[in-house]
Image 1: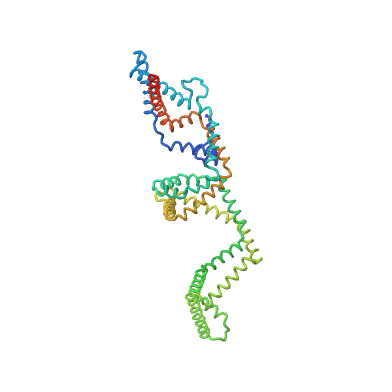
Image 2: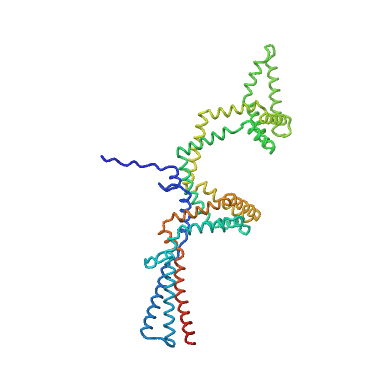
Length: 445
């Protein structure tokens, strides 16, 4: 029995790239982005202009050979011969110039030809320096005349562009979530949660939360709920309270007296709780509020409260139940997002689309918001890119140098070949006209 080669499990970085086994590196990411940019621009076929330029060269060659064979040297015949001769020379010169950009004409080792392949590294460095000096300078990054946020708003206002964003999110989210199933990523998340909990001062944090609630008046809702629940609890346990009162009452007090006392207590308690629910300035509510203020002060400044908070934190960190709970919550969130993103009516995608639409409306209607966003974007660019412009230039140079020469030449020809063929056509026509002009000048002399 032959041994089958064991299939190697892709690493975390390899899965993240979506291309195994090519590793994820800045050069690869930049190369892919630039490659995608080239691929996304639909090149115009240079086929028709190439045939026109080549046909004109062939036609001028035939006319020149025919005129020379027929000895056309004077009059209009001489002008035709001069036009054909100069046009042929111009066409050949421009063909040589265009071809020499990308390869050696006729395969001959002529100096200073195949300029792009021979100078790929230098072109990369020059392009990197050009981008650094003209696009990553302090003045360019300020972009005072460029409304970046307005441009983003106009782009997102097109429904197809928003759909492109949401489609890209649909593609990326499953890949990101897949990485969350990696053992090292799960361990990293758990470690970060534990580290976060270990740095929480539960006493002071609780005090700040309660102080924020009281400052905004939101604690009144909490007091409402507390009083209402107290009233419901008292009503549901009247018999128990009555039995407790009877047991605590001396033996010589008649039962009807206990009953009257209990009914008085019940009536007074019901009135107090009902009034406290209706009246925000009721004494019971004010007493609860005062107790809450004292409790907040204790949480924020009491050493005893600090110690109890530290004990709670140590209890959580040492509890296997807490770790299991964190893992369960993490897995539940991931599973829910995975399930949602696969549905056609994905809540996440719909929320993203609504958020983008709202952003477009807000930015379009508010020049002040655009100004603030522009200032924020420029600040981020200065902070992230401004002081690292040389790294960007080096990245561009390394990326271009890493490209395959044949592919680079092919892509460049696809993008500019259409216009280069018109250079040949123009060279043929302009050369012919110059030839006729020189012929007329000679004849005039």
